[in-house]
Length: 585
Ligand code: ADP
Image (cartoon, rainbow, N blue to C red; front, side):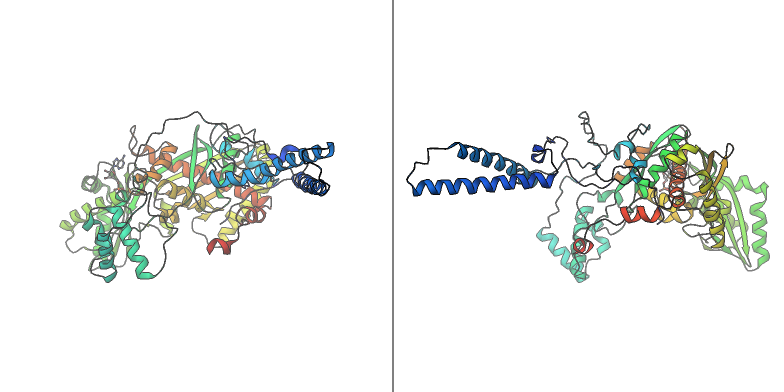
């Protein structure tokens, strides 16, 4: 991926979690006993401990030899005993108690340690960050204040009541029959009427059949009923993806905390920095240009002339109202906007566009299209429907038709970034950014023959937000179409940046949006479910957030590139010091 950050020479804080601290814990350590570096304190007390022990033992041996009672204690022995006790307490406090506590107590709260002096974090972790919510806090290196106890409200079923799945003897029989092939794996849910049990049995059968362990892929802690018939078939567990928060992203006067599900180091931090630059410059403005999901069936005739007849019929404005009535029967929300046709010989591609409310809308538009095709069959009985989707739609494939005509939500998002924010937060200059944008995002992409790829890394942000909010991640292909423009404004002092994204395909109802985790992320953005004010307002707002987050991501990565910091920050945040071979074994 392309993502990055800048660096400067100032001492700053690191994002590395170098130590785990309980917020309840007393932070005074045994090593604070002397105002010396840790290794010197340890050396002093070790020396003291062994010297005292040696001194006392040799003295007491001498006393025993000369028959002097041990109870007669000399001044030097008192000093030695005190030294022994002091050093013993220190060593126990340093090694013993910490060690025992680490075995007994689990840490409660991870905090980011601020020891590291990489300046990258200077940008991201600034204490004077004026923004109100969460990124500043989330990345703050100081110990967080204890939050007031809040009542825990369970809105949706997230975790199972029975966290550990135990297979019974009856299950064992079913596993054997799945392994033997007498019970089809796909039939387990309907056969057992218990989705979780079905998943556990399928999983065990799979392990036996393949001889491969699924350890590490969790089974417990997921509501398998919620995906039945909608999101995933034949489940055997679920993959965990961390969700980070970038923001607050200020768009059209509102702040959003943007959830991003990713395993890519730098991405959230980089987007967060972009959000900060936008916020400090007064926010971004996002404008919806159009909103319409498309579906394009392919139909075939005996002659090209007949295909052309249908094309002319569909494009005749006098026929639109009739077709719209037929189409709109499919849903309360699907409203036909237009039909665009393309001919290839005897074959006709009919690209229907319709509004879809808060749904991404693929099902909705497909139903409407089916209605129209059935209706057309009366006047065009020689029409052969070859496929409800003929790829002129175009879904999940790079295609110029989406780039030019748009699909889903077409959005343009812009901001004017103040010159001093470019310098202080992004650590580069307006001039460098404008020049690099021209060379990379415009000329470079043209040289590469790009199709909608006139940007630095829009797909990074689009995909992370899509996964977090339950969108179809495969639609990142066209949803990431984006042209990033940069221009010096206000006598060259400030930067005007915009992202134009013609095909953002998002919904806040249907598909994966109703699952517990994804729904929580939509809720965080304030766009969960169907909008109560006006149908489609939530999904349009989500599209604005996607575009705004892309704007932030573009700003930050381009700045990192302009400042020449990309490789450095990636080596730091994408290459942890963990021994990968150990982790994999
Ligand atoms: P998609 O068309 O994106 O695949 P689905 O068909 O799975 O989505 O989900 C849309 C469903 O949600 C439809 O049955 C629709 O009637 C219902 N729905 C409820 N409220 C809304 C709304 N505000 N906007 C769109 N659809 C809605």
